[in-house]
Image (cartoon, rainbow, N blue to C red; front, side, top):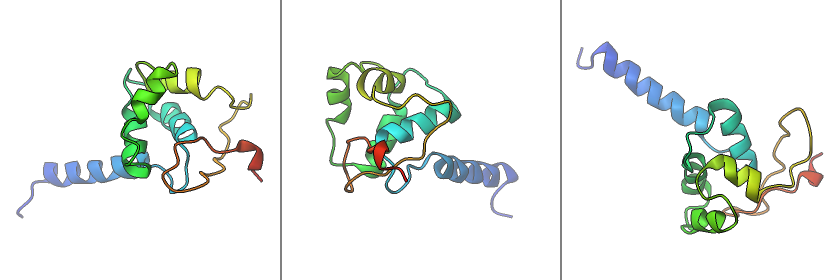
Length: 114
């Protein structure tokens, strides 16, 4: 066998990591951050913001800088606490209503949820 069991397991773990952290096709940044922080927590960086941007809005190269100017200086938690402050009060995570167009960095309109 060319690959050791460790190599096979590592390949599978990488595949599962990508699958679990892949942004939904129309999932907005706010809803993605809520989902990722709920599942995996914050590591005091913009790792999930970068992951979303690279997958869903690769042309938005200045996204992190814009978010930092609006109060999200250091991490994904601050994006939710200081930038996307209009999330409805609820005890559950709401399903994303979807972005209006591919590549949009605007949060979804949760009033459109149906």
